[in-house]
Image (cartoon, rainbow, N blue to C red; front, side):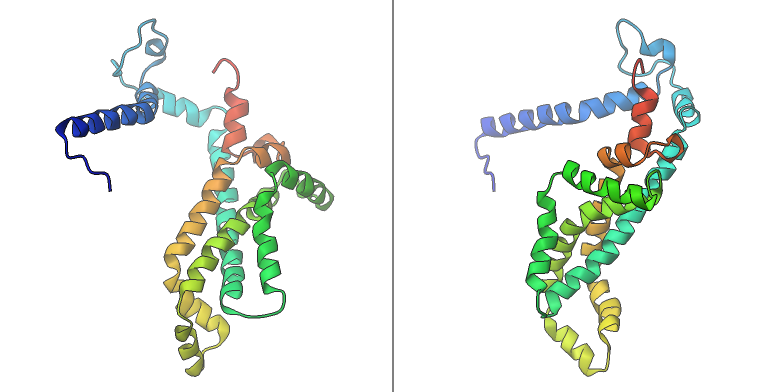
Length: 239
């Protein structure tokens, strides 16, 4: 732990922390303050810090122009679907790797985790012709599957580490009481692993929400665009 015994060291640390905080958070604060300024105040030669005439017209304009509500809905569908399917598949895969012993278990696990070594562009080049032949381009299904392909290795690794730490005695005791494997997983293991499952779900959702490469390539119809490409094509230019 950092020890700051000298008063000068403490002062320097506080000053450095304040400067770092200003550097990180000032753009966010400035963006929020600017959002409440009217158009006439936005283009003043000497900008004002606080809005002189606060207004909500910028928010109304953003929600009624450019199809932003539709883009947000598409992002919620694809990111939420990705989080759901990634969590479900990774749960079964990680539990199998952690608590069962069968031939080929480790090679399969290493092969799954090694998928993270490949660049996104290479994965996209592989997925695009498959989705094209299946007629999945310009659909939510294509984006959800693409996000699952990318997020699944990391999600499986996270859950594998969590399941491996759970004592096997709990599982053996449940089997002695007559519980089957699926009942043990659903009733005992999943409630215990809830923090890890939430982490994996958030990871899958954030990755799907922030994606730009897959959504730009696999979706070209404006009505199916997610928030990233939608904002890019709506406001690219003078805005």
